[in-house]
Length: 285
Ligand code: PDD
Image 1: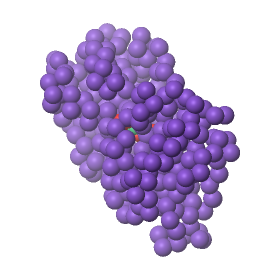
Image 2: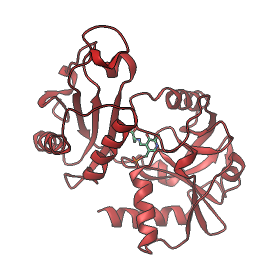
Image 3: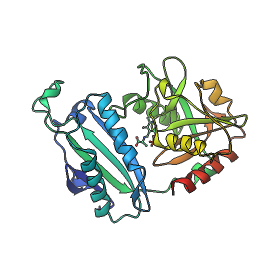
Image 4: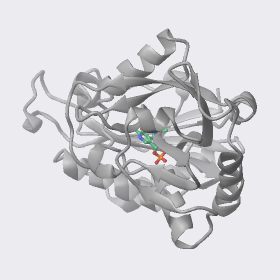
């Protein structure tokens, strides 16, 4: 299965054969940080920014990296080189390490484990652009403030995504304990209303997504045809939006046409959303 290669601490394995200790703290406690990116023309997208964000997430959970940024970059490039695929998704996972015993004590772990997954990237399904995807709202139970670290603990996001699938929706927009929409379970959230593009602020408990960052960069360079504003947004704002979409590095921009069974605008992917996708792809390519 050469289209799925996994690098564990420098050793490259075929996906199904890759193994890690059951004492790894990522497995035991979700005590890890991670990043997902992709390649365009076999070049990793914004890899320095992803590795920087990996280190920021590590800092936020006091995970002391035993790998340097340069070592991680070199392992990522090595894994891409070993893959025969034309374009890949890349997941970089850094766990605190393998414990010598059960227990939370961080002194029980040795050096980090660095795991890099690479897999052939599949194009987004065509119906995402013709029909758009549907979302539900999911009320988060645990309060978080500030921009989120990207750790291996995605429990609330998993529950949100599970609830969405049970309701036959694509995914969930999460609502924080103050009642504001934050993001999708693995994506950032956006609406267009009266000719302005809005997204929730990081301080509401939002991951500082790199696709989100890229759209801000494009706005700064006047590449967008409409103003971009960070604003606290309620579920009502989303339901009454003219257009809505989600973003992530691996999926780019995905139109949302239904929320909680209600059409957004006329219930088809918005004209501005599709135009944004076109100029986004032009920009990142
Ligand atoms: N997730 N918010 C959350 C909670 C995410 O997990 C992600 C990315 C994003 C978007 O970030 P970016 O634009 O950097 O991809 C926002 C990826 C897809 C994942 O978990 O695999």
